Image (cartoon, rainbow, N blue to C red; front, side, top):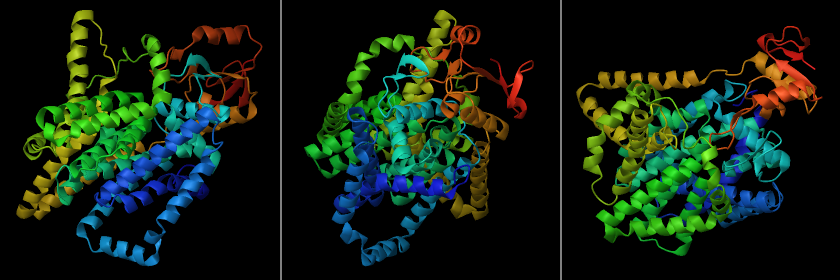
Length: 572
């Protein structure tokens, strides 16, 4: 399942996720019977993970990593199993299995969600280390937490700059390593199939709550889980699973408040449950706090303007208020660091321009065309209060991308002659893909319904083309970004060089994997002073007495380890 293919690693990470998600899934089936089954799964899994992440963060913040949390959570798991023991009897399980087996919709949903999980498993065993730049600093932060057994205020021992990045998920990875002995790389990789599949289930539940039948809702969820590249399958390619986890929690919150408000379920406990979901969302990823916070406020504003009598805006506002209260451990330090924003790349980060060709390749041709052609179906189907949140989210996130990527960036280029835009516009589109799945799914449903009545051979041909597109993209993810030579060199440096050794190489994996210092520490654009430090690099090599090694072309130096193009040489 995960490189290097040890079954024990797969079993440990599976046990960890089972323990994390089981309490919420059991309690949701017992106490949320008024929701659709898919909604119970998404809310149960989301609430269970959110509670685990929140309590684990407070435990590490107050006492240290894993000091009380494993025992507390073990008690919660045992308590939830005991509380729901009547649902776990053989007779009850047989009845549940019979209900699924006898339902055509349930079997179709199981096939689609298993396919979403399976296509995300395939790339995990193909690389020694995960692809993309982002995993290098995410795993580094998780290892810093694991090493220091505390929530770190900075990036020491590699950088003295303050840490701005939220670290609730990184703390979970560190706790999985300590409590379940799951390797950090394995824990990181597991985020991709877990949150990808749960997000698809949540989209299905949101579509059902918006008034769609099971068939259309399944097309919408399938369009997201199997056909969308950006914001779905692509997460593993650049290492965006932290964004994916935060977005999942925000969408679960939206789905929950819409369902509870529609059913008239009001009460302080519901506000705090939905608030907890968004609290952990912004404790996981700051851009999710920005984009999805605006998204939820847009939903509240649209509800107030167009269907005030439904009261959804009150539910959203009260849930956000509860979220702010629960999130004080994260929000208060964040407010104190607002003055450092100018030293980061948040306001000036320049990414590749998203022209039509870039959009076409990034989002996936079939998904992009279907979402564009299906927009009139969204306008027609979602005119009432149940569909309003979907339309509001679609306008907010896709509109935010258009304004920042094209309007703001065009204005800045014309007035200053350089490209620059704040808040990484592509993240708005990445998060908006969840809601672009609605027009895409509606289009696919209409297309295949009409085509099936006219030519089943044409339906088969189109289905094969869609499967070929997904298979081709997944195959592209199955690349070994770190080859055996580089991996062996990194392993040798980790195991054979002094702990204070300085490594001359721009390999982004040296700090995390080897726990050695280089001239370049991988940091997010949100961190002050991110980038290389040539002056420190020169000072260490020329003046300090620290041992120095070079990985790469080292003509004239003593060979320490032979590894092809990544051979290691002793410099001093």
